[in-house]
Length: 125
Image (tube, rainbow, N blue to C red; front, side, top):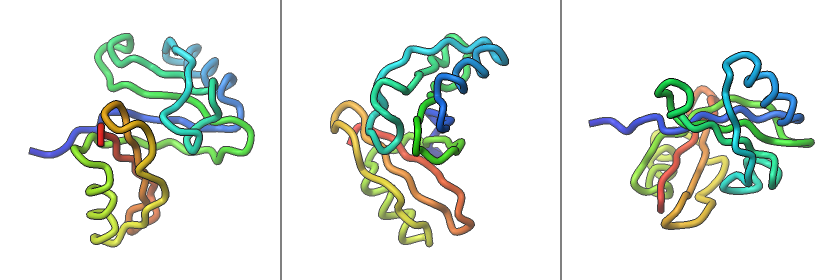
């Protein structure tokens, strides 16, 4: 069985404006907190979207801040972030971040695939 997409992320220079846009467009509600790591978003500027409030979608987040490159990406749930990053590298991907976060709670990593698309992996180790 494959591994599921567990989280989406929208990052930009003005996260408050982005959250306002997506609230108006999709009626998303945000809980603004810290992201798993400052590599993803400035502290206190990451708005979490609970999938249960969006009609059954996956969880997500909108964040960033000044100096953060705009992007949209998704995270795939994996049992071991480091192992997933190593496997991506062995298949021609390039590690861009991680593992970072709090083992046992949330650990994230990012890589680009052979075409340069940014993909995230998330797990508890």
